[in-house]
Image (cartoon, rainbow, N blue to C red; front, side, top):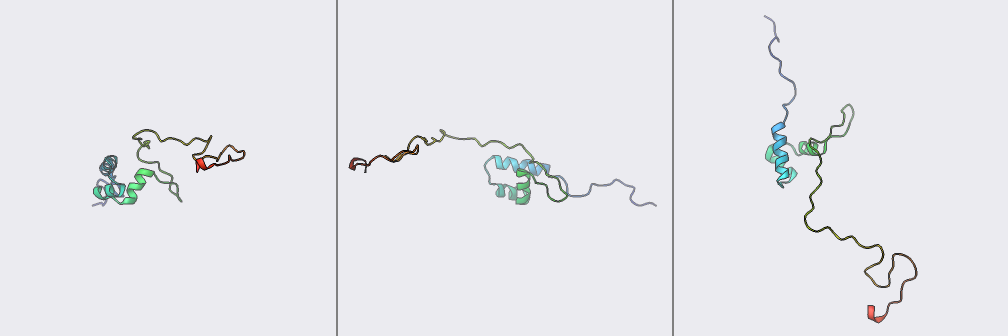
Length: 107
């Protein structure tokens, strides 16, 4: 009787496809990354690798993130950008030139 002629199973750990989907679903719902990793029963480092991908190191090739990066959604009015033409303090100018004399009225 010969050994090893049956079906061969793949070596290594099983793919965590369902866990990955559940992890990203929880993160999208607003749960923290470490908290979502604990809820799905994976290591925090695995969650980081899924989110950020993996850089090339030694004999391993770089691996991109498991989903496309989504730009954060801004809520509310856009932030006002400060003007480069002047300053909020009277007598101070960014554009150069001599500062103006401050009077008692501006103090």
